[in-house]
Each structure stands twice: as C-alpha cells, then as structure tokens.
Image 1 (cartoon, helix red, strand yellow):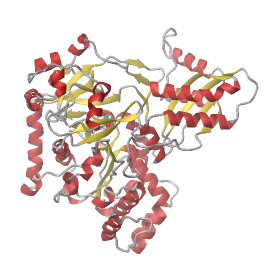
Image 2 (cartoon, protein in one colour):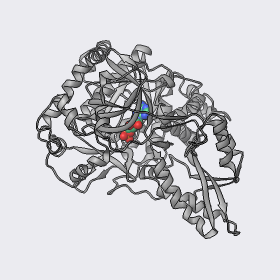
Image 3 (tube, rainbow, N blue to C red):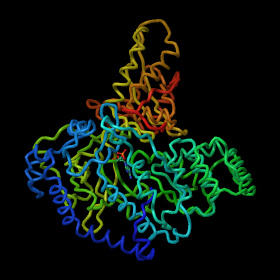
Image 4 (cartoon, rainbow, N blue to C red):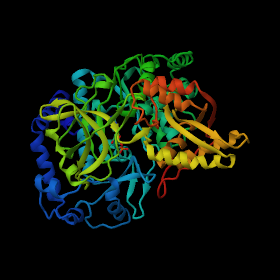
Length: 611
Ligand code: AMP
C-alpha cells in the first residue's frame, strides 16, 4: 500500500527521517502499555460528554479499570441505531465530541449493506502516520528505493451521501481524495508512476488504462509494483492481457486513445507520453508470447518486490503472483480497516505465511478476546464459532495489548478516537512474537467468512439463505437439494463462486438448464451488496452450480472419516479448500451451469459515480 509523506522529509534528510521513524517505532513498542493507557484516557476525556459513554454510565471516568468494568463489548449491530441517527442528521455528540466528518463504508456488511464507520478529520493524520512508517521500514531491507518509482494501481470507489448529506465512501477513497495524499510535498518514497489525476478518475476503465499506460512508459524507473490487495494487482495484469495492443499503439505514437475522455486524465497522461516505437514493439512482443510467466520481471525489469496484501483470504493468489513475477518477494506492509489503521509488518521480506503485523499502540486502544476454534483437518477448513454478544464472564476475558500470550489466538476489539468503544472488528489474530513489549500478530481470518474472491466476505448464514432462496426454483420439478458445499475458484481471473449441489428428484420431468441458471442468478441476487458490486464491476465472475452424482456427499463423509473425523460429529463443510476433496467433487460432476447475467447493484442512497 502506498505510504503517505510526512512533512519531515522536507525538513530532514531521507536518512534522518527514516531514523526518526524507526525511533518512533522503538519508542512506542517499548512503552506500549503506557502509550495504550494514555490513548484510552485521551479518548475518554475528550469524549466525556458523548451520549454513548454517559448512557452506559461512565460519567467522565477515564481510567482503564472503570472503562473495562462499565463499558460493554459491542458489535456493529449494537451501535447501528446511533450510526443511523448521525446519518440522518443528529449533530449532537452521540459517539464522539468531535464532528463526524464522514462515514467510511467497510467491505464488512450488516443485513446485506456495507457497514458504515464514523470518522473524524484528525483520523486522516493517524492514517498518514502509519503510512509514513512503511518506507523507512522497507528501506532497511531494500536500499535505494528512493532512486526510482512505485507502480501502484490505486482506485477511488463509489461515494454516496447519507440523508443528512454526510459523505459515505471507502477509507481509501477518502484518503486519496484528501490533501494528505493529493497535495503531498515531493518525497522520493511517494513518487508513483500514476499521476494523481489517474488515481482520482471516477471511471474505473479510464483509471486503469491510464495508470497502466503510465506504468509501461516509465517501465525502467519502476522499482516496486503493487496494489492494495493481491486480487487488485492480478486484475491489472489481466487488464494488460486484454488491452496491450491498444496501450502499445499509444506508446508507439505518443498519443492517447480517445476512449480516455476525462480531460484532467488526458492532460496528466500526455505529460508522460512521448512516441517510443522501440518500447511499444518490446511490450507487444513480450505480451504476444504464449506464456506470461515472469511478465512482471520482463516488462518492469528493475522491480524488487510486489507490494500487495497476500495474508488472509488473499493467500489464494500467491501462486498466480509467483507465476507472473517468477517468484519476486511478495510484501505485505500493513494491516488496516475502516474502523482504524492497526499496524505494520516490521519484517517485510519474510515469506507470506510468516507475515506478522506489529500493532502501533498510538493508533487506538486495543483489547483482545481469546478465541477457541474448531479445526477440521478433513476439509481443510478452519471454522471459528460465531460469538454473538458476550456474557459478563466473557467480557472479563479480554486482555490488553501487552498481556497477550505467544501462540494464542484473539479477536481484535478496538476503542477509537472516532467513537467506537470496545468494538469487535471481526478479525482473528495469532500472537507470533513481540517487538519490544508490543505483540506481533499473524492475521488468521475474518470470523465466519467462508467465501471471498475480492473484497466480498460471504459467511455461512448468507450463503445458506441465498441457496435456500434459489431452491424454490426446484419445487415445480419435485426436486430437492439434499447437500451442498462451495468453493472460491480463483484459478481464472476474475475468480468466481462454485456451488456443488447434490439433488434428489421424485418427479420425472427433467429440470431444464434455464432453471439451474435461474438458481445461480437467485443466489447472486441474494448475496450482499459488496458481492453484487464486485460482480457488476467484474471483480468476480458469474456464479457456477455444479450438479454432482447422487452419493457424492456420502463419499465426502467417508473420506473425512478416513482422515479421522468423528462419525457422530461430522457435518458437511459448507466450503471446501482441500485439494483431494475438490478432486473428489469434481470427478463426480454431471452438469455445470453459470449465472446468465449480473445481479443488480445499487449503493445505499445515491451513488455519485459508477465504481
Ligand atoms: P475494510 O473495513 O473494508 O477496510 O476491511 C478491513 C478488513 O480487511 C480487515 O478487518 C481485515 O479483515 C482485512 N484486512 C486488512 N488488512 C489486511 C491484511 N494485511 N491482511 C489480511 N486481511 C486484511
């Protein structure tokens, strides 16, 4: 992820600035507990008059003990009524005494809609601070990055307004549109191939085209490439596969295709373009080859690493990235969310499976709820039991940042400057080690998520309800769905959801393909708005139903039991990842059907642009 500049680089030399940033990390990790105590007391004293805190009876107390005793641990649904009041125009200090400047729309959903996190202006500064740590850390491992550019594919997304006129948009859209990003002073570490205008272009095609073009024409200067998530970077490579001829025409002639109509984008791109037939021929010949293995190292020969998140569900893209890059290091620099930015990876060249994030104690007040999970080796699926609200005893189990235990898994709970108190983020982390007194966490998973291709996060209940809606199409044929499971297929770009269905049918009328296609479509229509938005913008391909032979799921159970699953406790996994199980399922597929069209997507309230 790109880093924000700090004024410091204009005042100090690069080395001095890097040193100061590393000293900051040293300092806050050494004094992690004191910093956390101070952060909590600052949040509580500033917001002492916030209605939420008074409602729960905190009455101006700012110490940790009182806070832990009095304030409940909550989920989004608990704060939703307050969030709705703010969205509808209540300007009283409900969650926080500062003015809520906007809502950040999370990729996590509630009742099918994106969650909306309140934020305040000064949080932008905290996000910038976290970004500003990334390159000083990186430069300890890869020197000389200041001598070239970063080619990052960055996009803004749909922006809506709440009924009271507050903006609601994704956190990165908010950041890229802020002066922290747009008006950054020159800094060799934030020197990107994409001009701001191309990143801030609302049309996703024009934005991608122009960013790719600028990246190609500056190919020798590029020292690092990336996007936020692995899926986004792979989408960019796929875009190149489809459009390289057009791009090469522009490079050859030094002109810009008329499909780019945004005047500010045209102006910015034309500034970087000069006719370069030699480069165009080279790119065209490389892209025209049958195999795209190592394409990144060929087109951008000085690239030292790929900067993308490949932890969590994004790990499914590692083989594809390895293929395109001939195994360049995959670097996960940071861990963040709409609620708050959390931490950085202090050992960025480590293997993706070893990545751990050091939470920066100044970002928010962090607590940790121990989790107990069920490992199901037979299906390769890790399930983490859904915990609804916590009882008093469970609330007592939360521990502070410096008290987590090595190897233990925890659910992350945050208290933010913007007015979330003891809020369950929904991520499960494992303690992998410590930097001084601050723990370093492996990202384990998002709770309950079974399927994910891009920013979508479908849980078992959503999947189940969607499948239930679809099976009504089978009723006229006296047919019934007896078992099902699912798989996130990312072998092609874009990836898509696959459902394996086993049916039983009493009626004798054959079920026509159109009925299964209707089932696919109904499932898609029933999934949440993040899934549907990703479908509409082609980050996810059409959902597929694969009908399997009768008896397939019995075979699956036999297989799980042969691997040690208990016959009494066996439950069909609702999602599979384990290769032998997929092989078994695929060997018994009799028919496949794809969703014939895109589900409908409309952002909550009105959408100001098309992305
Ligand atoms: P959003 O609220 O849409 O910004 O999404 C934030 C969520 O994305 C986090 O709570 C995590 O579940 C996930 N996420 C963010 N950073 C990482 C990371 N470095 N590795 C794995 N998952 C991440």
